[in-house]
Image (cartoon, rainbow, N blue to C red; front, side):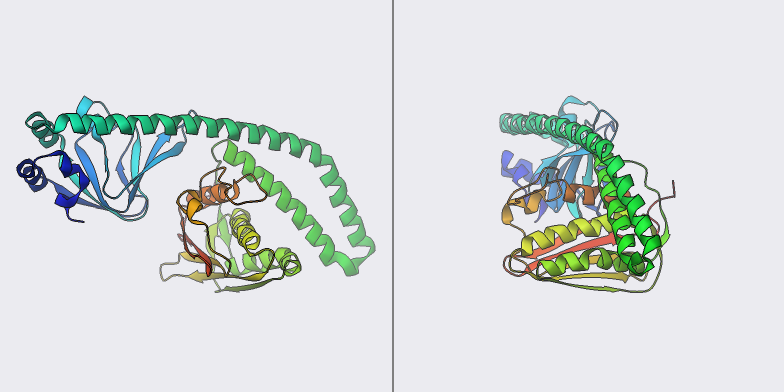
Length: 364
């Protein structure tokens, strides 16, 4: 899209639109790059030409929460331009993005010289209504997360003793019957998995926690994953294939294993009841970064949920679950300074791409 083709210029007469466009500058952002931060003083209005901009607002605990997305042919930063106050939110690129920056002085000058002011004001009022609605929805989401956190905390308190008994009996069986030690190890690993899932839910309900990282081998992680899930998937008529390059990377292996579990669970649910194939690969890139792919040959992700797949409580079309799995997955990957994206086609399947840098964060 050329700058002058942006819908913003429809507010102005052609001559004024051309004058404004001639003073504009193009801004290119890479994925996750900050356009401006909450509290910054305004210098420009930004028109989105390509890509999307994510708007984030800190919650009461100081953690940034996504409240809106500004897509191509829309604009951002208008309120601070008009009232002169600091930026009320942070804006960053969601994927690569191309924008046009129009200085505050140019905007104020030309709004005062044309009949565009009323139309522009009406557009801003509509945006404020949408923003207020998004804020209400965010407050409701936080309340739901608080309830989930309290519920999980109570459940884990009640389950702690039964889990301890199961682990104790598993260890006793292992000592009496060494020939079934592999099965006993699987029992212990599944108990650890349940505990880890609950801990992830608790962390997510509180806005996240510190990420503890250390070097690990992705090939070993996939071997663990296969051991924990092959029989389960086989019972559903789902074939599992894994492949991993040799090498090491820094990260939290247990949390990344749960990322694979969540992606696999969604794929398995999509493949029920007819079965199918899930393929997981781990490949190192030249700079040492890791690319994990999880692919299935299912029906594809429904159109209705593609835009908010990683949002909490997104349960469209699901028969079970709270709708938190993909939100937690996204949170874990963000904590590793990584990215996740997907490609899906109706009737042919879905592939998720998880990109993890070689050194995501210092060990806590």
